[in-house]
Length: 458
Image (cartoon, rainbow, N blue to C red; front, side, top):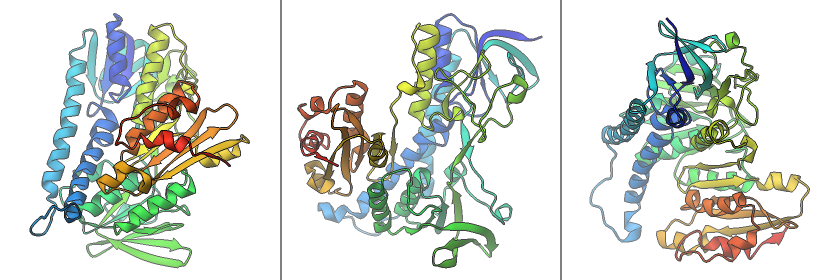
């Protein structure tokens, strides 16, 4: 017998559970389907566990620098990866269990454990059970890309998920990919004590960022003893004794990089290839992302896609905002759209990068008259006091409208201070509102108004 629901949600990531909460509170009968751990990528293999590891790596880094602050530590500083992993596991497991407990306590929510496949536009098969729903919301996330490199099938490699299972310190971690995920793990494991090599195919790290940001991050990474090969392509992999050998084509010729472990961090692909979406008639783009409109509706009227699988944002905060958009439109009579969202994200190396809006490259290409403000972290009192002066902050303003177009803060607390600028952009207020605001001293944010007062036209 097929059980009918008002709505079914596939995937308990960052968008699914809060949507179930809103729907059940509105009196809807809802099916929540999850095949693995509750909480999705962020809770289990993404933001929460990785930032827990980053915190441990930061502690190791500070311990190594303790003498600079007048703190003497006797003996050699070592990392116990079993304790590091146990701490990470406790944090992530608690977060996952909290999501599960929350869902189980929702009146009107029925949980199905298993993989879902469409049997029709309004019906799903989960295990041996069939259910139908007036509306179906897909929140299935994405996974690491495994490239078709010759020899990859002959070695044991790690992804952002399986690297979480390590409770030993790699002797030499080789990372394919010098972008956000790759760089966070590179610095983290270097601080734990591993030798680390990053291989990036593009001419510079983080190619979507401005050149000054990429160059500064390269300096930060290399200063910590991480080897970086740019404009380098891995053309083959092999096992040689206990070592993994990466054959790499560089501008100077072909080299071999030998490591104990290999981490793949070259991109992600949506988990849409085994949902039976072709049976439901849902359209995908060439990369497998579900095509949605401004309101996150697919081409099938009763089906929505939220989170990373729709290709409209690869972050936890954009997935949660997807939920907010859908809930507001369906339950609150609003007309919120994805295009209302201002691009913002962070890179959680140390020091972190906080980004919002346009990059300098995009702003210059827009044809506007641009005001640029820039300040080195060596001129920020809070950074000097903390002994963390690497990086800079930068802001871009439309000279005619006085509206902020974008900003980047690469430096201590940059991932927090950027929200001062984000809030002004959402308020659609001129930069002068922030320039005249009185900020707390001593903080990183207090220098944002100073930077705004020193802008020049470019």
